[in-house]
Image (cartoon, rainbow, N blue to C red; front, side):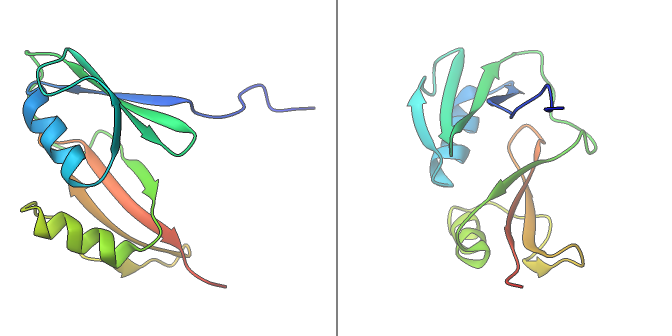
Length: 122
């Protein structure tokens, strides 16, 4: 029997400050396909899917973990260097995890936790 849910097409995150969110995701190299710093809705292409940002002026930065969006990248250490060079402070440094991935975490301006990861070679 086939799984009734095939894949995730998009994840939408709320932001109180679209300009700050767009600056963050642009600096990290996400490819913007629609929207802008002053738009109510902005979309980035992420592999075959999308990451959306929706303006919600009442959204307050998250005080604690809500969950985590995990993005696979070609080179975790290069992505970490890009995040730091852009002036952002990751909450963890790159590390090899016992579940078989190299990863690090960073929070976007609204407090959403992002993980950038890559499976370790077998």
